[in-house]
Image (cartoon, rainbow, N blue to C red; front, side):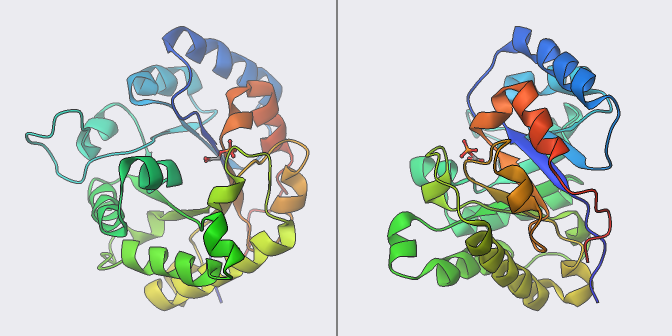
Length: 259
Ligand code: PGA
């Protein structure tokens, strides 16, 4: 028996938008949403927009950061600690997005340190995993993703692990317009769920939402989110429009107790 998982729909703004765009975005999003739905909605803006976004979002979305450093403070020019993010009002932190891994050399060991630091700071890590096209073509997607997961969740403290979220984002589907088929995504999500069960135990793993990411749009969201182990979506490009993001949120099934 597993636990209760909310549907989570998250916007990753990446390196887009400036201060003056924040309030109008949430004003439009709020007007379309009109208090509907029980989904957990999260927006990940760039660092300088965090406080603005927290104020503008109010109750309509939780705000998260796109990255963090694992040390609490110190001589790390250009880095931002978890306590700084918490003080800005962030509640979640993305860890190990494939752009961080590929462009900035983040390793699974870095991800493990970040996951532990985010949990220790009382925030929720959203750990991203996913295979490249070469790995998929070689049939290694399962091995790669299970390895990323087990390494990044190494030595996870029992305390707070119920705040963990996972995003499965096949690298070849990010920003390319190519989405994994709902069947392929479901197969990977089921493998991730099984791995979480081994790492965290049945009770704790049952509470962890597993989101799909990679070219999610209003047109394909409902089909993906209908699969039993797909608990939500992490949306990049389409989340830059409040209208498109709101319609992806609206496409999520009204299930509060996916177990
Ligand atoms: P995409 O990005 O929706 O633009 O493919 C998803 C992500 O990178 O989180």
